[in-house]
Image (tube, rainbow, N blue to C red; front, side, top):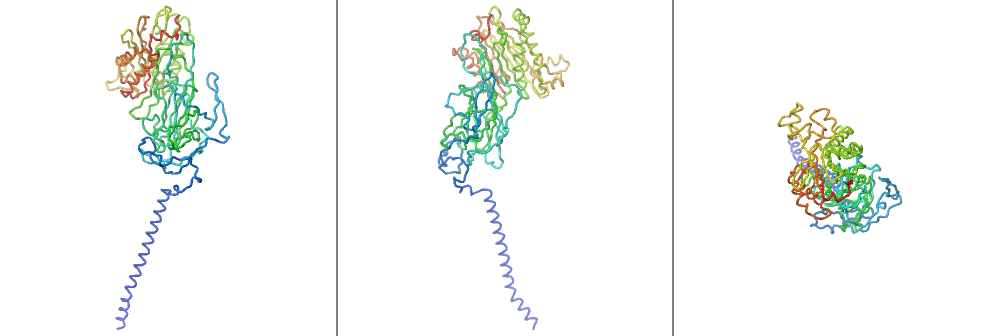
Length: 607
């Protein structure tokens, strides 16, 4: 009986115990859910940083921003997002004295000018008509913060700082090679008497040193008007295409001012601003989409687009010899594919007319580098110097004038150049056209070449090839290999990765493989009577890859009846445009010589 009573009591308490356990479990689960919710909330706050929407303008170091209402949906090149609705306006360009430290820069011909660091030091000039040419180079550097990645195609509006620190050490890529000497395509008129004029030219190189496009480079020459101004932006057809969400579609451009002989930077109404050495250069009416005034650039400057993309500027200057009337010289680095990055420029064009000390002679040529532009730059200076040095000897010059043949001169000049070059792993083609007047005022032309840059002449409608193709697949080179006792198989179209077998430089390859040579092809002499109509075209392989010699001559004839004083430039540009249309995928340089017009220029003394 007692046992029955205890069992009944125990059973009576079981519902209470179960209910208590259930309550404790519910409380525990609720606690777990609350902790998970708090953790997720904390994670959301850390990721989204909502406090940035509540900061007052007084606590921010940012520059005035573009109101959200100013963003137009139909403007394709404007940034698409804005997180600021403040109506701040006005931006002072006044800077402390610390930014006014002046320096002096020494350039060739004892020419000097002053510049000052910072915004105040960059003289803001009135807008002028820009004119530049293809021999300038530019280097840009951009920095990148991986934490700021967003979807491609959108421009993220960030707080724009009016002044923020940069490294004291400027990011400049040094180049110990010779200066590029691309000749300009500036309009020129006939001259009545020759003086060895020297024209100041500049080479601009941009290298992105920080940002999503870090490592991207771009170069321009001040004489290359066909590829200027150079545009910096996020969308094609910008010349320097930056994959940075803070960069506007067309953010800024750089051009050569022919009046001040300086490179100038202009902000094109960007949303996130343009800074030069940390100082804002965009329009004071921020957000108006107005272009800024031009600001002069100096060697070593750092351009910042938005907050992350930084670009290093390197400038070099040189003096260029007078370009005769009737000569057009143009070039374009081109790109490997439509809308792709511009290729590094390795073509070097040169002209010396007259040759120093031998005024009856003039020289024109193109060197197309591979493995870099160093060998082409060196050869473009050595070849004319060596030809002039050899012709300075009276007996050598007399032989040319009496025999009407400069074969030995050209062969010796190439041999000297090859011996003087020390480029182990860089090389270049070399196509050189030598012209001269004899004592009877008769004009002669003779060409020498290595590689696949070519020259063609047209005399009274007759096409005259002046060069030989030195590609591995050419008939002449195959015959030379067979004569050496080292024929190639039909399927072998390259040697050590190169498609040419004759070049200057590449000393290492020549030591390893006897197929390579620096022996030039020398053309026959072409005599041009005063009654003849004649012109010549020299071009790198970027042209000949897409246009035959016959087609090139036809293109030149189409423009040859133009009486404009700039017809030589127009014809050269017309041929270059055709190469662009046919989508050549290599650097293209062109020199056009109108011998009829050349006779009217006293470039060469007609003794």
